[in-house]
Length: 292
Image (tube, rainbow, N blue to C red):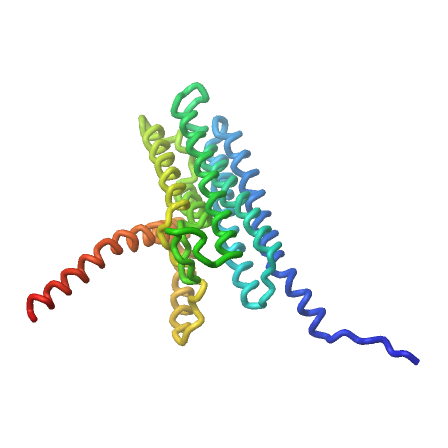
């Protein structure tokens, strides 16, 4: 009798592992979808119930924060299980366009721009333009990342060399997370503020979104944290994560804002320090020459 060939037991398990990163990506998409719905619902009830609108905006901000967690996990799980695929990379980018591109601009429009300025106001028109440019910059950032992932070489003369420790340009999840942390810190719509503060703070938010868009398409390097935890000092990383986790649990509104601001700022600080290092080296070389 002919015996049927039995497939190795681990082959079915291997196929099942490919589902796990996609499941995290699906959760990322779900958070972006819920964020958009919460933002729209919050904008609808601003005039009648600002407190309830703040609840919806807070839900939207939390959705973006959870999406960042799922987006981080799907990449790490794919690398750990070696289940990274080309379609997974494309699916992840499409999810990021929704969750970290469209969702935050809907949130900021409902919480700040749409709540403060009427459609006849020129600042409202300018605010819509800024939101669109933020979305375009974020989409370009994702497209550039995909090219770098598929062809990890110098694409053209002057393009920075890609490495695993750093991102080129501010990642779009970090930009969206920073915007969400601001809303989570003060979920009440900006039009509830006194006197001329709504106009002032809304303009500041528009400027901030323009800056974040420029940072995304810039060549400033940001730490990727992909290699963090792989060395001998991983025990210290566990302690740091535990401490940060407890602080976030106790002071979530403040800690999320501080962490998001610190990440956005650290790339700028590194970039500025890069101009000082060559000068220091030249000064040291000059001193050695004089001493000799």
